[in-house]
Structure formats: C-alpha cells, structure tokens
Length: 307
Image (spheres, rainbow, N blue to C red):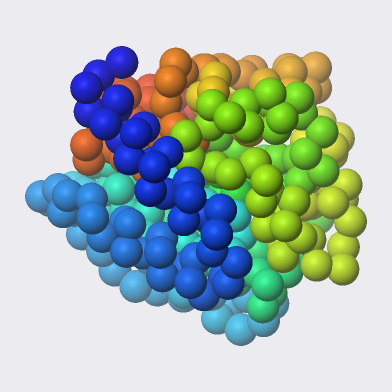
C-alpha cells in the first residue's frame, strides 16, 4: 500500500464516510460530491472538452465530449458516471474520463443522464440507451464503442446492455466497470461482511439511497439490478473492485454470471483500496494502475476489427 493510499483511506474513513452517513438530502449530496471532485489536482495538459446534446425520452440529454490532443475519431467510450444515481456529472468525474481519453487515444462521451429522486428508474438507463442508439444511427459500429462506468455507472453499463439487447440493438465492443453496483437488493455477503472495513461507503445507508432510484419499481428488476438479468453472449468485460468494499460481491457474482453466459471476463480485486479507487487517479498510483489496465483492455477490444 502506498503512503498516499494510506492517507486517502484515513481521510475517507474520518471525513467522507461520516458525511455520506449523515447527508440525507440529494441536493446536499450533489454539492458535496462536486466540492470533493474540485479538491483533486487540475486536468492534465492536452485534454479538450466540448458540449453537445442527444435527444432523449424526456428532452435533450446534455453530453460532454472529452478528448486528448489527437484523438481517434471512430472509436468512442461512453462513460456513465457514478454517484448512487443521485449525484455526479460529467465535470465531477473528469479525473477518470480525462485519463481514459489520454491513455486510449479515443474520445469519451459522458452523458449527463437524469438523476433520482426527481427521475427514478428507468430514467437513467433510458437516457443511456438514447446516447448509444444515437451513435449507432450516426454510423458508428458497435465494435467501435465501449461502455464504461464506476459504481452506479458501472451497474448502469450492464443495465444498458440488457435494455439494448431487449430492443434489438447489438452489444458494444466491450464493457469496463469499476466497483459496479449491480444488485440493489443487496443480497451479497460483503454488504454485511465489509460494513466495518469499507472506508468510504456507509453500509447502513445503502438501502435508503437505493430506494430513491428504485422509486415505485422493483429492486429485483434487471434494469435496476442487472446482476439478476439474463445475459446472452455478453461482450468482453473488465470488472474491478476492492476486497474491502461493501460492493465486492456485486463484482464477483457479476463476473461469474457473465462467464456462465459465455462472456470473456477479467476480474481484478485490489487490496485495501476504497470504493471506485479510479476516481483518485490524479493522486493515487493504485488508481492509475487500474485505469492503465482498463485503457489497455479497451484499446485491445476496440481495435479488434483491424487485426
């Protein structure tokens, strides 16, 4: 464990986790995340941003494009940010999207999808599908597109896959999920077993937070809990999680399910890292190592057509 990781874990345990345990109002939670993201070092050189929008089921969906100075125009990463479906934005997750853009050489498309509780399920996955189908209609091939996301965004990647296949659209070239939240019924053992050792997520709040997104739906709905869905010939996937986080078993069980469905899966469980460690890429070597692995995985799979 690096000294920086030791410091970050202590900071999260003593300041961030207690804050997440007591903040009940979604608007306050959103402001807290945006402020926290603002404390990270500035964006690296050579990264460009542009604003766009995609027509969605409830109006236009704002989209941020992130690219390095010289970007491949054909290959695209759709990045679905985390934040428990309640918070987060393209700007709050630039620590991840900038790194992916720089180290893959591909453009990253980050939709500002609708958030709960104002827009509960299935709003987020419907918006994500609108973004994906927009690219397909623009002439991009599915094998030129990767889905990626962390936490709720990681779960949303797999809900998007299920919905796309249900609607008759093809699967993407690959999926990358960091600490994915794929079971909102919270049936995994780690929800309880790691409640004390998770330095970031307060286990006692997880059901309450999930309820905002579930709304009047069912937690067991596969578009809410994609772990409970049926996958057919899923695309290659890379899944990461920390051995000490409460969502560890979401990642492990998802990897097993995808393999049982015939998918190729790389599962990486890291030691002593916080939930979605990739968020801390500007300051943690462990986060950069994970994003390096993810970048290599995406490049290998989206370049398959050239081999």
